[in-house]
Length: 111
Length: 114
Image 1 (cartoon, rainbow over the protein chains, first blue to last red):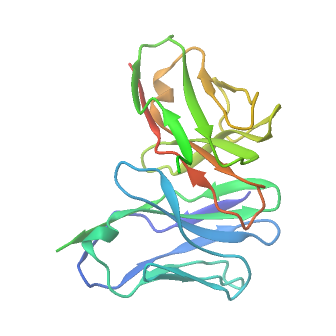
Image 2 (cartoon, chains in turn brown, purple):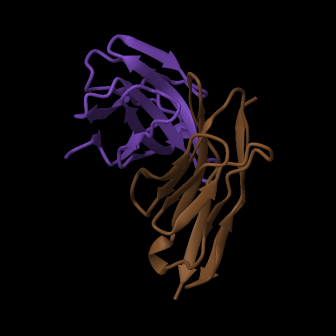
């Protein structure tokens, strides 16, 4: 069935380190892909999205590229900050099926 | 800009009690959703609605009920609370439900059933 597999956490990085969080999906049809972020004590909010193959979504220094051939949408940031500490969720939305989420990856950035 | 508002933020229930989690949005969105978030398990869809008077089950509907009498409100009802329903509940909304559209989330309700 439809599912999202993302990198297990928690991930702990020093400030200014490079971040990659892997995400792959199994979906029927041609989904739109999303990364949502959840800061402590808050609800989820959209970080970035891509709606077709080879599209790159970007926001706040984060990037992810829609790779249809590998069914992947890995999240990257070149230099993380303490304020990036949060839980990151990969998700997809296909046709009439409501959004399907991965399990989330907790990121902690230490100064 | 209120967006999606959930109440209460925290609640402790005893086994067998009932309660309603409230959710309201002021963006005139047609689609509304209820998710639960268990530690390390991501978000699972409980129920969703595509418009007033229309609701449908998600992945984990057992033990819950919903109604959608207005566009703005989408309450979630727990009739006989069980420890397995201890979780964080999120309400979300979107305008059309199209696959390229983002969801707007409330700040969540943390529920403990003891």
